[in-house]
Length: 219
Image (tube, rainbow, N blue to C red; front, side):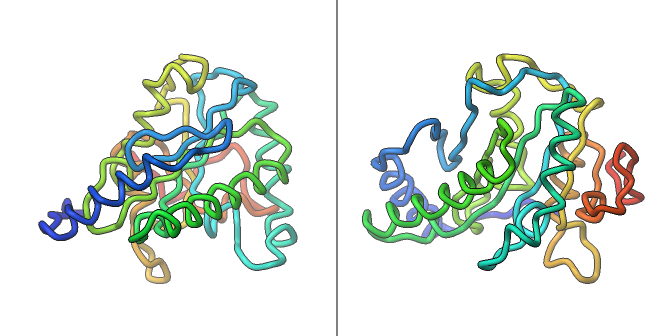
């Protein structure tokens, strides 16, 4: 996937948007680094092994009945947590990056983090969450397939108890794998750039081979 070269207007809009984002007060435990919103609660158990996931159409399937369509996910994440993994979510979102006013930005940020807070509460686990909210046309370092969100997990003393993750003992699950039915390949490319084994969302299904690799994997 060739890197995107942003235009001058896109960069100008991005800079203005980032100023608005910086003015938004985030509820605890949410923090911000550039265009990345993230939560690394102190209850997270440090581990060099990271079970990393995309969000939409991997863990969360949208709609009013999302709890029913995601009910199989909680048991799988609990198994990983009990096995000693740090369970983390890496997601691209777009609403905040499109805003032109402070009120619009505040609403978009509030609604975005609310979706993730609801999911964390649903799972009942101390999950770390990283959300890239920049526009998709500026090649922001945090937006997948760029690796800024992973680097934040790996280097921030607030995340993972300061323990550096080992990509060789970790993996990433996502639904954007470049298949004919996928909109893009950002998830498999993100895994490749970080050096993570890649698994598609099917691995999470009740019939999926927990503990085994998916045929589509990053080498």
